[in-house]
Length: 404
Image 1: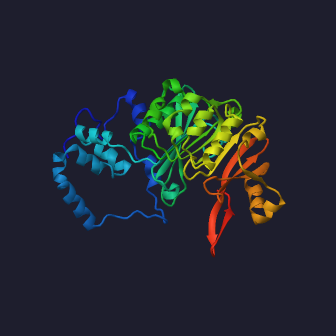
Image 2: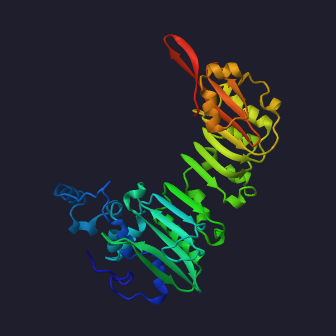
Image 3: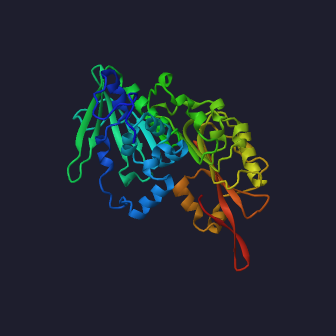
């Protein structure tokens, strides 16, 4: 390895005081990650054997030729390094530093929340804080994760965490960042980790009352998120659920309109047109502008074979009084009477236990009358489920009912 340049801090070299906060908040010291090194019986780390090493050396041309590799190859190697090893490589030379900096970390999940007041292992009394969790591995129990607690200490920010030592009880560790606000520092730290992985996360969880958007870099996050997502979930804090509303222009984003599943535990200003153009097979939100006519058309598209492929359920919440005649206008349906309950062989009872039961009817497809939807209208929700499915047995065709 080449000698570290003057532009990159050397190991053991004293840092200027104004940089201490920056380096500390980057956590380029290793005891934070001691807890990621303890053995995990479920998924033990495998030590590379001689064959692995020969294969790797052959692939990159030998470590003595490290500086001759092109940047793409160097980044491919760095991509598989543990975080500690990345940090060590980053102080070897200016070029190594740039390679490490340019290679996104593989981070599975980042969580940041400010609604947990109880951390008795650090303080006996409750205190305001922000928790940041970074999970590097998809398996929560792998040990490849850490949790930091940010709180105010006078004019400074205190950061606390557990240091895990094999065969010993975890130790409480802390550091202090001078002259700064804990709330902003927690957000800054979390967003730095988002940037470290080039925003290529499988999961982001944010539960905060006053996220500092004016100083945040997360404002551009939506532009970095792929248009096609597997699922999206937005949850308003309990105190805000009745008043917080997602505006229509934000709902028009492709990440929402094209997602396969979404659940919004808050009000959402979807229009009838937006509802009809959603690609989600499973959805749930508190309605603001959805009309009875819009719901009727949504159902009609399904019975005419023009609905969302592999549709499962649509839960449209709200206390607005619904016109049942308008909801079912032009639809062929069957009331859940005693005859239907007997025919459905226990399905209605299961449905009531799992989904609740208001005014329920079965609405049949015009493409295949053995396929059907359940429309369940209650005081606080219009719920639509695909429950009736075509089956054949011993030459007999019939409808089988199940909860999606």
